Each structure stands twice: as structure tokens, then as C-alpha cells.
Image (cartoon, rainbow, N blue to C red; front, side, top):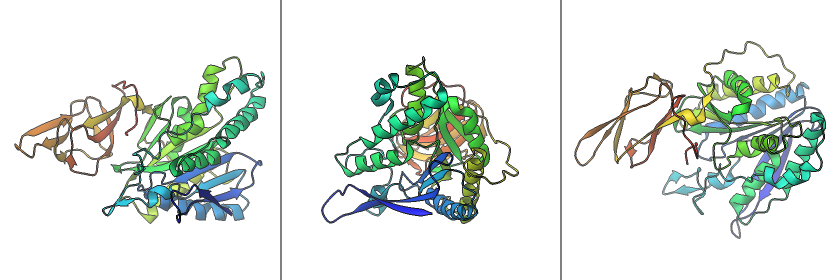
Length: 371
């Protein structure tokens, strides 16, 4: 294992920010996998999993079982890790301007399309390294005017040339679920089976360019914009939601790290036996069909269903009790599906998302992810 430290642009004199990057295997000898944890810095179960992964990968490297390169960033957001306001950890949004640490990554395909139009060939195996090199150069050329933008640029540079990108998060109160691109449904289902995911949510574009799509989606865009050339989807990217915020358990973390390793073995990054893979617990569904249960007014939330419950259309999900009048509003779902996440707070302001259901009935458009 090689450990690198990448310095992040300092936000103020006397302060220092850095990323710890762990490298396993040998670049150029096989596929490259990139894995990071806690980009939303208050989603700390991911840190337990990345640390378990570091131990397991070190053992596998000592056995000569890594075929290619694995880059692991155990804690991907030093800025968010330090943000505490009145005793509460604020790791999802940058307190400088309110921006989401997992939105707004550089969209690289438009930056390289003209260059590639003059370079690509009729042979797909020739085109993949050309595209990878162009995307890496475009990521390297990004400039930053503040620390958060520099952090995003540095993370993208580490990952953009990878064959596999896994961004480890968690929801507030949830079962294991995964977000990925629609054309990569088969690989996403494979990852979901390895991790025991209860929902696999797919989109061609979820909106606002989250980290995983900043790495995987350029290949899809180039495929669409340059149809005269054979272009493979050479990067699989996924956001993995490791259950809920309070699911900090050593046994679960070791299980999840093992599941990641089994997936990497299936994808040819690790040369270890793939033994006893579990059956997939769900079929992929469209992210556009994910139904948010939203509070129509402020009130106290009383849930009737919990993460992992299968629900039918019209079923009661929660009551919302008006604090001023005591009036109870019944909140029902429109879709049949699986309730895969719900909020942690039991006080809701108007418009707050209270729960999410993986279904197929709805066809939402626009920004599909939570803010």
C-alpha cells in the first residue's frame, strides 16, 4: 500500500486541508477502481467501510491478489468534517455558500468532444484510451477559486480515468440502496447483489452532476454525441447508500467491505474466488419512479411504515399532526414499491421530504435527487 497526501487549497491563513489517498496494486496492469467515503462528511458509516476495505485490500495486496489498481480515499471531505455549528455536524453542504458537496462537478464531455471528433477511430479498443486520456487532461485543467471547488477538482482527477467508481454515502434512516446509470443496469444489479441492496435506482441523468455521474456519464454523452464512432461505457459509477446514519456497526462494515471486494473480483480487479454470491434482493427501478412523500405543511411526523417495507398504492405512510390545531393529515403513497429511506427528524417544515419509495408508476422529470 502506498499512501499519498494531497493538499487542498487553504481557506484562510493558518489552516491546512488535505486528502489521504491509499493506493493498492500496480497502475496499468489491469482495471482501475476508485472508492471514496463520506463525501457528505456527516454520513460516517462510509468511513467504517473504507477503513475495513483498507485492511482487507492490504491483505489481498500482500497475497498478490490485486489485478490492476485500487485507489481508496477513506475520508473524502476534510472541509465538511470540520463544519460544526452549535454542536451539530454540517457535512452535506458547504457553509460558505450552501452548495452540496456532491453536486456541481465539472461536466467534462463538452470540453473534449471537439478534440475527440478528430482523434477517434472505427476501432473501439483504440478509442477507449483516447477518451480516458482526454477526460483526465480536462479534469487536470480545472481551476478553483476556493477550497470546496479545489476539493471537487482533486477528487475528480483521482477518479475520472477509472473503470469503476464507487462513492460511499448513507441516507438518514434507510436500507442499503444504489444509484447508477440506466444503461449500466446489469452491472448495478451485480453490485446490488454483492451488497444486499434493497433498491437499485437508475437514471440517464439525475441532475446537478453528482460525483459518480461526473465520472461515468461523459462516456454516455460522448456515445450520444459522436454516434459515428464506437464508444463503450468504459466507466461504471455508482453512489452506494450504506443504510442510515446510525448504522455504525463493525460487523456490518466488514460485511459491506467484503461485498465490495466480491464485486471487484467479479469485475476482474481482484483475483480471488467469488464464492456464494447472494441472490439479488431487488430488480433495478427508474429513479424517475422514486416517489418522495412530502409534508404539505409543518407538523409532527408519525410514521406508519419503516425502511424495507413493501407498500401498495394508496397505503398510509405517515401522519402529519398540525401543532396549532391537532388536525391530522394522512400522507399516502401513489406508487407500489419499497420504502427505502425516511427522514430522521419528526418535525417537518412545509415541503420537507419525509420518505422515499422505489416504484415504477411515476415518471418524474428534472432534478431527481434530494437537494
